[in-house]
Amino acid sequence: MMQGPFHRGGHNKPMGEINVVPFIDVMLVLLVIFMIAAPMLTQGVQVDLPQVTSEPIEDVEDSDPIIVSVDRDGEYYISLDDEETSVSLDNIGDRIIAILERRPDTPVMVRGDRNVSYGQVVTLMSTLQTAGVANVGLISEPPSGDEN
Image (cartoon, rainbow, N blue to C red):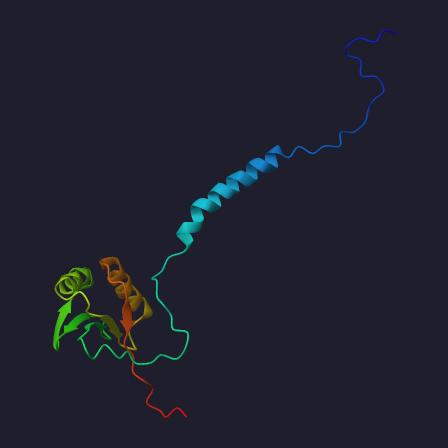
């Protein structure tokens, strides 16, 4: 019997290799998807959180701060030098920038009513950050009870 070029002979061994090319293709596609999606998952306002119990800010009394307030109805107010003006959220950034151009070292403080939603305070702080205010302080009142 002639053995031609197409004759396989008796070598019927199973192939011991796994083709990993499709696995690598899927992994690369997933890697690209997660690289694109990861920056979109983190959003927020950068806030320096205190590591210990807060102490009153001493230098605020020396220079009158800009106080941006949110009342229980969700209305926004800017207080400066005992003068309080009502303002919309869209105009807060422009007003604060105009005040800080005249008085650049003026601290900016946020005062929110305890009944206003957390989202409105975060939106206000985000608006101030977008306007270029580097540091924003939060005004709170100490608890009324004795803490011993």
